[in-house]
Length: 114
Image (cartoon, rainbow, N blue to C red):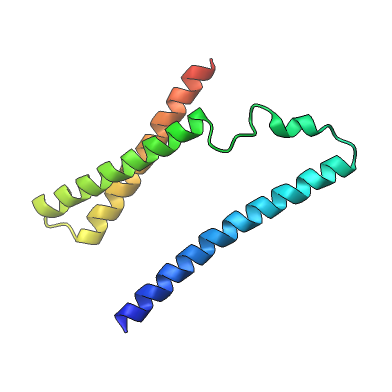
């Protein structure tokens, strides 16, 4: 029974991710078609912000994933060295380090802009 639940959860996760990506691209396509039909210049689609994974977005994603990895390591240490419950230790450390990495990225990006 546990095996079936694991398979269903995995399928639901991938179906959700596929749904988000599908909705994103179909909505973007419809918006672009509407702009072109109204006579807007097509050059607005090849601008500076058109690349989905630009250098700063890639840096943000990298920092976030490193933060999550550090959170998992810190959660393991917290579980080993304290009597804290396993789920609480891992969850809190993942959110703490993931959030900290995003705050650090924000500070870096803001400093770079000015």
